Image (tube, rainbow, N blue to C red):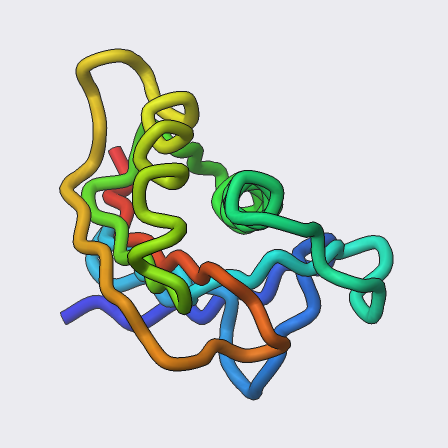
Length: 131
């Protein structure tokens, strides 16, 4: 059995709780849910609206993946958490394909939740596979 690799990305977003940015096991990479915070100004106000927050979350996920030599093309599964599901689901769906190569969307689950850390509208975690 291979050892687990715990990744903390120096240039990544500041964790909002005690966790690794990602943990890797046998080539599978489990990326912790990211928030729409700005790594350069982690205490700044969050972007306004689902499109801006989702874009920031995806930028943060890309920072984490890049920090371990991967990209969105390696993502196999995404889990998305929305605090305003009825209001934001359509906006999220309209934006989502823009992050991936056409025809190569990862599997996905989207869940409505009552609240997220830092008052975010959206949080996304990923599973990726190292080639």
